[in-house]
Image (cartoon, rainbow over all chains, first blue to last red; front, side, top):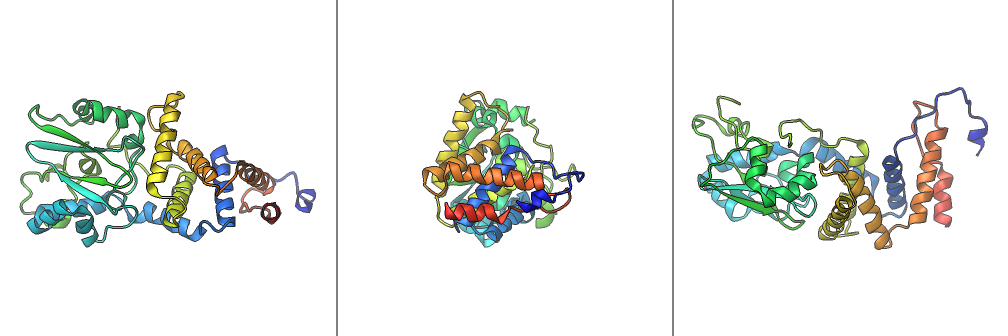
Length: 209
Length: 116
């Protein structure tokens, strides 16, 4: 270890990172050394999730569904194929199901097991989606949880809770707000929030967006 | 309780992104399937909560990392000794690298591993 012998001890050393940082580096080094993963592939996946995919993709799907009845029918019949039509596929989005809200039914999505999420159309889940509290309580008392998100639903609206798995991931199609008949697809997409597509929110009204 | 309007970065820490990317790359390469991962990770999350872990999801990626290590060990793609040795090698690399220089693993650490 000659480098150590010649090292100038007056220099500031690089700060030692936290335990998980070191373990993650150890794991990647081992897996790359064994040829199980390509570091470039890992970087590309991180770059895609950091920059290219997110709730704007889902908002595009919802806005198309609002403005094109034929697309809406295809989306509700086969979510995977309809989302792929707009270029949102792969990334474990092989079995995507769109569930549409109405005056009678409000849909909300959870993954009680871990945090399965419709990645191609929503990107990465928010921290609360991954919390044990949300995962347990939204099944048990959805109305109370939604009210904590600021969403008060009339008593006669049925709440359906959809439990995502690694095989099936759900996207909520929120109701189209009133008063946005003149808006084009891009302007409609601006009304669609991430939470409205998980079901813990609703689409924004045109005047408040 | 829930903070739906708080903006969030995709990954709060670079190592979260790293293990997320690693997991995807491993699944894409067929090292394990997504249901295998989901079941293993789900069980680890449940255990962490039972053992007194936080209820707010703040330990999510800590549990993810431990679950990824244990799944790979279970499937004979990794072993605890190698992970410990490489963790020690990375620790040494950080301690020996002057501030501002890129931290790289001493190639001896990899050679030793290959020999072992």
